[in-house]
Structure formats: structure tokens, C-alpha cells
Image 1 (cartoon, rainbow, N blue to C red):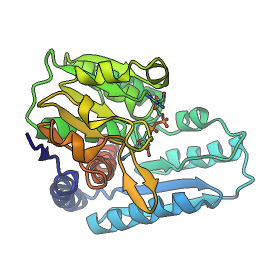
Image 2 (cartoon, rainbow, N blue to C red; image 1 turned 30 degrees about the vertical axis):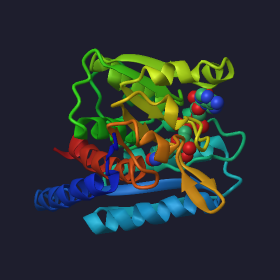
Image 3 (cartoon, rainbow, N blue to C red; image 1 turned 180 degrees about the vertical axis):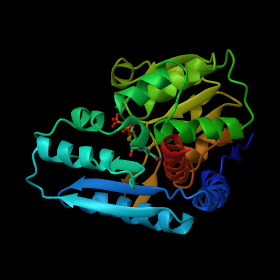
Length: 285
Ligand code: NAD
């Protein structure tokens, strides 16, 4: 079997086309989505993201501003800035660029973002709505993963799903979204790997999602015949970008697989833009 490619890039393109039309119709109703990214200090990795965010927003007609606070800003200063943005009626979306300088409590700052403006879905209130099965603004990568599964045309009810990685932003919310669809979900993490149990879990996955950040951690011959493989990992190795799954070998066994790059990444960006419109609608419609 050679897997079909879950082409995140082209799905993202279609979503963005739709969003562009939605922005136009919102503007006709006098609603102008306006996204503000807050970053503390300069950071080359963050600059790549903020430039991409700006370009994407411009293409869709969403206003975008980058607010860079000084590297020495304290927690209170950052929270005060976010609270001003919460109160500013013209700002409809807020992104907090990570990492924050040492000494600043990231969750505390994320908690200060108004839940209705929280386009990354990182405020505990938005995380909580995911837990209750009534999601509002969903963490973007988790939303992208769900979209990819939907594209593969899979009914999740009772399916054996293995999520490798339990980060707050990817693994945990994805596991909850899958649970809400009645998938039978196993969540693996570093301790699963250290006990040597990872192959055993991966081998039984009808749907395998990997968000670890270790190039080719998941061997191709562990993949179950006919599985759907969603590789979230981004690893820079000798000038190349590799996923967490051995793509070439895995694609001989899987039914569907995401490429890296060009799979989850571009769709995550599209979901951020989708959330930006949804946030504007939550506040203004
Ligand atoms: P993280 O770095 O916060 O956590 C890593 C997870 O992997 C943890 O659950 C840890 O326990 C687990 N882990 C580590 N070593 C392991 C091992 N040997 N066996 C099993 N599990 C192990 O994770 P994150 O922020 O979700 O990021 C994971 C990867 O996904 C990174 O490569 C990141 O760059 C990428 N990522 C991509 C996107 C995208 O849009 N494509 C978005 C977010 C993250």
C-alpha cells in the first residue's frame, strides 16, 4: 500500500479563500477583524512567525499589528498591556508570542487574554470549553489535526487512536477533541518512550498522531497497515525539515499520511486565521 497524502497546504489554501470572502462580508457589516500579536523582547524565531502572520492577515484583509515590549518587561507590564488590548473595542484578536522571558508565568499571562479575543485558544476558559465538548476557540494545531482526520473521511466512533505527545497546546486538547467524538484514545509521552512501550501502542493505532519534536522517532515498520498518520513534528536536521515519523517507510503501510513540511503546519496557520474571524464574530455579531 502507498498512502494518499493529506495535503495540508492545499486544504489551507481552500480555507483561506473562504475566509477572504468572509472578511469581505464582515466588512460590509462594518466589522473589521484586527489581530494584535504581543511579543516581549526580540527573538529571531518569533520574527519568522510574526512576519508570516502579517503576510497571511494582509492577504485576507485582516488588520495586523505587532506590539513588541522591552526584553526587561515584567509580568505585570505584560498583563497590563494585554488588559488594555482587551478593553480596546477595535482589537478583536490577541496572540501572545512565546517564549516569554524567564520569570514571567506564561499561563498567568495567557489567562489574562479575554477569552473572546483569544485566537490561539490558550486561555483556560477556552481549554475548559474543549474539555466540556463545547469548544469555542480551539488551539490551532488541534483544530488542524481534526480537520485532517475529517478530510480522510474517517468516522472516529470507537476508533483506536494513539496520540504521542501530551503538550498543553497540541497533545492534550487533541486527545480531548477526539474523546468527545468517542474515539478510544491512548496518550503516550516521554515515560511511554522510556519504558520502551511506544512501538506496542503505535502498532495498534488506526489513527496515529505524533507531536514530540524528535526526528524520525516513530519507525515506519511500527505503523499499522491502513492507518492514518498525522505528523505534527518539525525538526531541523542538516538543513532539512523532518517530521517525527519515518515518512518514506511509513507511507508504504499507511492509508493516509501528512507530509512534513506541508501537512499540519500550513493548516495550523489557516486555523489561526479562522479563529481570528470567529473571535471577531463572537464579539461583534
Ligand atoms: P512539547 O515539546 O511541549 O512536548 C513534547 C512531548 O513529547 C511531551 O509530551 C513529551 O513527553 C513527549 N516526548 C518526548 N520524548 C518522547 C519519547 N522519546 N517518546 C514519547 N514521547 C516523547 O510538544 P509540542 O509543543 O506539542 O511540540 C511537539 C512538536 O510539534 C515539535 O516538533 C513542534 O515544533 C511541533 N509543532 C508543530 C506545529 C505545527 O503547526 N506543525 C505546532 C505545534 C508544535
